[in-house]
Amino acid sequence: MALVGESMSDDIETICDQLLELANDNIEFYYGGCPVFAVALHDLSRWPMYALVDRDAYALREVLHAYVRPDRRTVVDVWGPRTLTAIYADFDQLRLHPESVKEVHLNRATLLRLSGANPYCPTIAAALPIAREVLALTRQLHQLRHSHCRFEDECTKQRGTR
Image 1: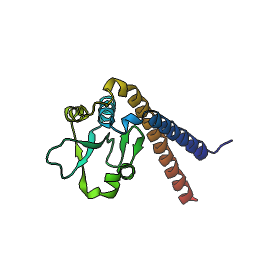
Image 2: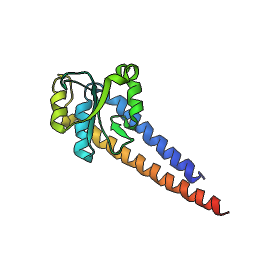
Image 3: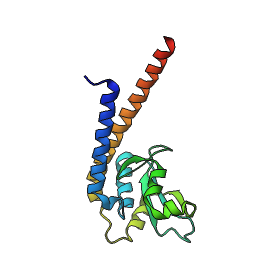
Image 4: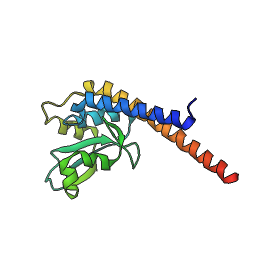
């Protein structure tokens, strides 16, 4: 019989594997289609949309990467919940020249306008089913991690009273 912690850890690993497979199968929503994917995630979750843009650009013409933020520490894109540091590691410009990039809060119209410049960008209709899956897995992962933290807190309290 597995311990509660091991079972929960297995569940978290399974969800992470599902997110990885989903992202690999839909990589167009990471490279080029991320603005549309961010809009789809926003439409489903109502989480605010953000983008990394060139700090020195005269006018906002290009998004380096777009995502939603359920909280200050977490970003969600086709790969699921991650940190901004993880996104920086994926892109040479961000990793090599982080000072040249800034994060901006963007509205739906602006993100869609910016994605319209890419003729290969997927549509929102194509993004929505994948965004639904990513959102559901993200929420499951959050719930597991949250209940795991509460469980750890309870264990810590019990150890303190012995």
